[in-house]
Length: 398
Ligand code: LMG
Ligand code: NDP
Ligand code: PMR
Image (cartoon, rainbow, N blue to C red; front, side, top):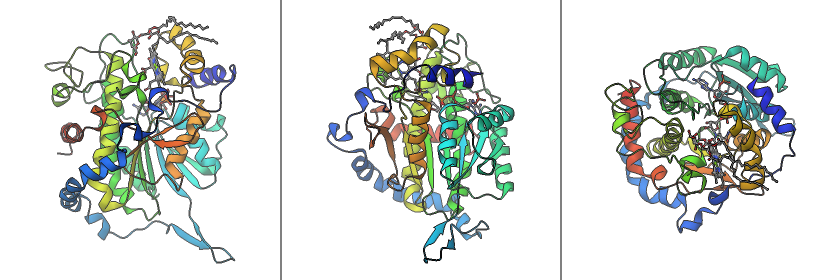
């Protein structure tokens, strides 16, 4: 229903082709140093330090035989090698950005999409109504609000025998009107538990599978957002993201003896969402620092534009849902259609020119991609390490 409603909304307005990213849509050189330079300068020593750890944890994978179809498996009569179909897992592909990305990739005929969704029937209906051809997708159950379900998904995926070439962590919940926190199966506040911790466990486990793939460009993508970045106007709309000293996260976000919020403050659903997006962007960078050099995997995040018609706003008050799309279209001009956002994320999945790791991608008003600058907090290496270390304890990896 939410999906149909959002399609109705989007088709009843004229949709501009390009999204504009407001304050953030400036070149990253605005701040003098590009993100890539920062990454090189700050992270080379920690990358070396982490190589050892990586070899201990993941290195054994290399010794195993790869049983999947070789990536380059056909030779055309002209002697050109062709690539097998890529295999991409997209979480939350039953609506919005995830569905649009699945459609964009499937339509190229070069990708098989594993739609990792919590509601099988909804996903099946969504795939059908989006017109995705049967042979181009598989739906597999994944509820990110349960760590058991994440582990079960990983087992099922491995049993399917498919290679993993790209993982897209896209699913999210946004609970702006909630007065009290709600919780995941393990008792973590639901927004951070789903958007960050569920994806954290999933991507840590599937790193091994990505590493096994012989696909020429392997990628792990975590969807971020402008609203988690306080170096933009949108990121300064209260409540602002702020992880503080992470005392709430360290306490497990239980809302019992500790706060349900990462910074230990009072519960605020909109802030919890924005904090979760900061965690997503920090996690991407920590992956990059720890594993890029050794694995060659590209780690990336992005802000796809303001897709004001998606199910993300389903919990917001009706007046907001009514006014938000025209506000973004005509006033901020940050609006982007679901279709356009899907093309953007599909680019980050498969475009041969977007292989750089450690990057937060955005698009300018002509829909051209550029490396954007993250806020101070969302690019703080110490915070990234701390989020990583606390999160691995919470999800049972350490
Ligand atoms: C808080 O709400 C929540 O309480 C909190 O829980 C959390 O969710 C947080 O950050 C998330 O939000 C704040 C929100 C609540 O209020 C706002 O921030 C107001 C902005 C909402 C965005 C919609 C703006 C709508 C502007 C209307 C423009 C329509 C334009 C069409 C134009 C076409 C022209 C060519 O508030 C709401 O959710 C309800 C929204 C109430 C709207 C109040 C309207 C004030 C409008 C002032 C703008 C004037 C613009 C005039 C435009 C005229 C153009 C000619
Ligand atoms: P939607 O609500 O349309 O899509 C979110 C998806 O996540 C749905 O498929 C939903 O499943 C799924 N999901 C929610 N909870 C779980 C769970 N526990 N387990 C598995 N899947 C779950 O929102 P969007 O498409 O807008 O959001 C996609 C991503 O884009 C999010 O990461 C969001 O933060 C990001 N983003 C969105 C922006 C926007 O303007 N909309 C802007 C910037 C970033 P179900 O269909 O079953 O509800
Ligand atoms: Mg925001 C100036 C540009 C701009 C952009 C690109 C966004 C994106 N927003 C902008 C501006 C403003 N917003 C302004 C000036 C206001 C005050 C009127 C405003 C308000 C606002 C609200 C209440 N905006 C919101 C909300 C939400 O509830 C959304 C949110 O914060 O979700 C966490 C939201 C968003 N604005 C955006 C984007 C992309 C969102 C969705 C957030 C996300 O998915 O991360």
